[in-house]
Length: 331
Image 1 (cartoon, one colour):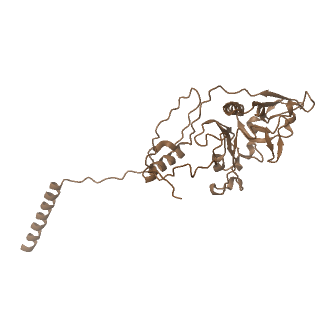
Image 2 (cartoon, one colour; image 1 turned 135 degrees about the vertical axis):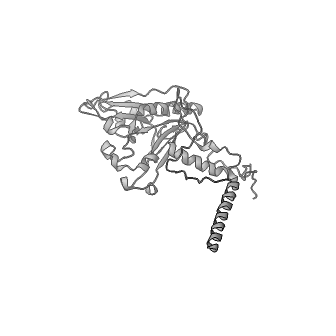
Image 3 (spheres, helix red, strand yellow; image 1 turned 45 degrees about the horizontal axis):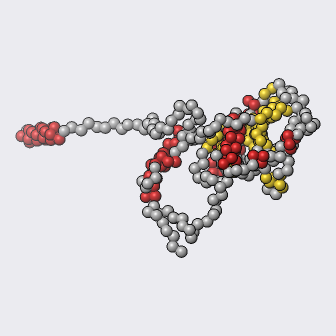
């Protein structure tokens, strides 16, 4: 059947070709979701096999630039790039492993465990961070290992190994979600606030939503569990910055694409992202100005003389040369 298009060549949706794919209210907004938080990592991330400072030399720089964990208004999204040859892996050989989890599904809401086992009768899921310590919690290992964010499919009714003492029971069924992190408690607090706002707007039962905790190792196998408080409302969206080198590449590509017919009517700076911090930030959106390249050398230009002077000088030289020739003939 014929498809109706607008002046720009885009397909216009009508009642005949309308479909319900991607129209779930739990996934809305599908495009343009606001970013609320971005997790910070240590220099040796994303070394998942042995996340310690000694393995920093094994992580390629290209993998660091592709590693991220972000909280949006309706989902959490993270990418674990895979570098098979460690520090020798090039950009072309790195593979992405991007995961998108909406707040109405695990790990933020009680549901299926391991894709086929229902886990809805042992309490809501738990997302918590743990500070590594040694020697009966006397030595803080965060400078060497960073903090680790875990998730468990259920909280086991907040029971402990010895009923009222010992570590939480959900430590047995939890697995690391993000390792080698920095200031993960602030990230979890924003995650909790975004999840609660999401559940309230979509009328989801709060007893099914995840619990956010902070587990501190106190030694003698007795961990202290603290509740992560929600962040201040309303949440302010972040504006990401890719660095000056990447901004220059984006701006140059946008300038080239602005001359194409498909870019007519689209603002040139619509895809450029710059970081503005949260409340009280002094950063504002400013146009990017390219710095002059110091490698470029200016060529020396020869001074041109006026046309009248050139003609007079040439005529004078011609007369002198003709006079010398006549003298030679007479001799």
